[in-house]
View 1 (tube, rainbow, N blue to C red):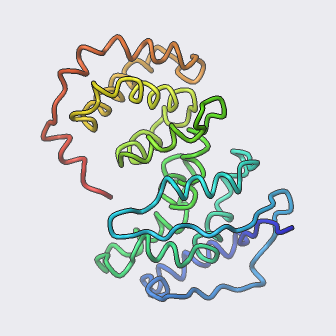
View 2 (view 1 turned 120 degrees about the vertical axis):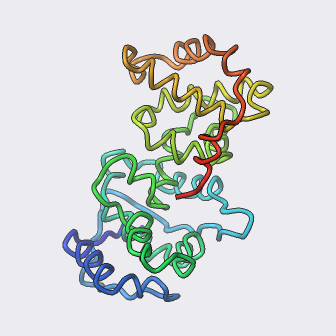
Length: 256
């Protein structure tokens, strides 16, 4: 049985320092040399280190890869999944080739290279938003928040989540995105009202999230059942149906 490898905390900081000093030159290479003496083993997490599907020009395969990662690490607890040393090891060693394809550093402007690498290969300042920027951590957390064993297809909500960039960019990093109840209720609501969301879907989902942020001022969403959350959403059906793209929404489409 293999156990999960991770870097020492001091080595993670060393990698960051080297990155800043060398402006990310090491991340332009097809291989990454790490120091084996800086690798630890977490014997509470077993793993098989499965291969991920390589990104292609028209498909990053995020949904399929989220299933692969979560199926492997399904027993990992949320507390364990905030260990930045694990995700840093996975991006720099196990999935280095994948990361080169998923986030081609050579395409970034030189002055933005360091911040780009810090966002996607590391987790700077542990919080929910940064956990969603690390590309391997995102795969696990996205599946963890959406996996529902009571559904005929337990990954149906996960597939919906990865159907639109807005979900992973704006829903998960937000305050409400930390709640499985809220995330699942919103995704279920969209799936159950396909006719409403078939046009201007991005703008309508953003509208719904803005309404949810307003309601959260007096409703504690994490403590509310999914059915009740969806009932709150249904109050805005007429308004949602009228939503079309706005200039502000078009600006938000830019990837960061």
